[in-house]
Length: 332
Image (cartoon, rainbow, N blue to C red; front, side, top):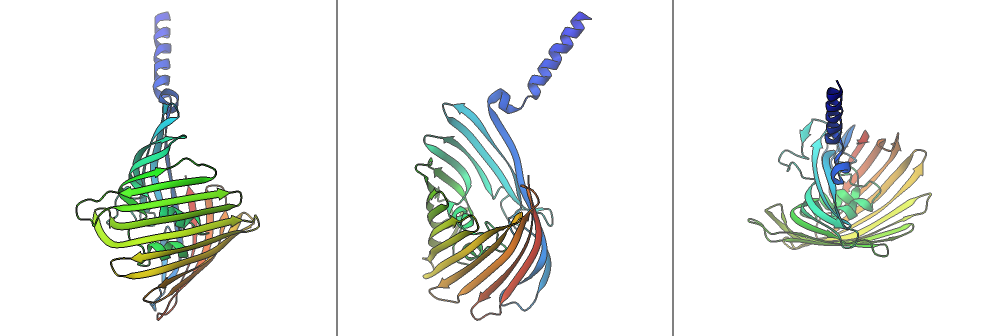
C-alpha cells in the first residue's frame, strides 16, 4: 500500500507538472482573442435609387479571431507571433470576401526588446491604416468612418490594410515619440516593393502622427503606384475629444491626386460616447465626395457595446447615399 501510495503521488505530481501553463515552465504565453460585430440596418449607396435592408458583419469593426504568443528569451529579449483571421459573422464565412487570404489580418513572427524596439516579419497591418483608424472617432469602421472609407474603399489609395511579405520595425518610445519603418518585398508579378514610414508623438492630452507610404503591389499582384501621406492629431479636453486628419494620395499611374480631410469628435455621455465625423475627398480631376456620420456607442461592459449609427454620403453628380445600423460588438 505504501508503494502504491508513493507511486500514485508521483503520478499526480507528474501529471500536474505537465498540465502547468507554458508561462510556468518556459516563461511563455499564448492568447486566443477576437471580436464579433453584427448589426441590422438599411443602406443606399450614392447614385443608387434602391434602399436595402441588411444584417451585416463588421459595420463598426470587422469581425476577427486569432492567436498570439510571446516567449521570454532572457536579457530583456522576447520572441512573439500573431495569427489573425477576418470572418463574416453574419454568415459564418471566413475572410472579408470570398478570395480573402485566411490569415489576412496579421500573420507574423518577430523579436522585441525594450532597448532596440520590435521587428516583425510576415503579413503586418500597415502603420498608415493604424494612423487612419487611431485619429478618427469611428476607429476602423469600414461601414461608417469617413476616413477609412475615403482612403480604403473609394478608389484613392491602393494596397490593402495589411502588407504580405513585409518587415516592420517599431522603435522604442523615446520622449513620447515612436518611429516605424515598413517594407514589403517585391515578388514575381509585382511592380516592385512597398515602403512606409510612420512617426507618432504624444504628450498628455495631445496625440499626433505622420504617415507616408509608397504602394506598387498588393500581395504579389501589381497595382497602381500610389504615394500617400497623412498628418493627424487628437486633443482630449475631457468633456470632448477632437480629431483632425489631412492627407494626400497621388496616383502616379493615373496622374490624379486626392486631398482627403477628416474632422470629428467624441463626447462621453453616460456609459457611452456620442460620435461624429465629417470627411471630404477633393480630387484634382473628378467628383468631390463628402461623408458625414454620427451615432452613439453604449458600453454594457468593457467587452460588450451596443451602437446606433447613421451616415450621409454625397458624391457630386450622383443622388445622395445613406445608411444606418443598430448593432452589438463583443470582444473576447
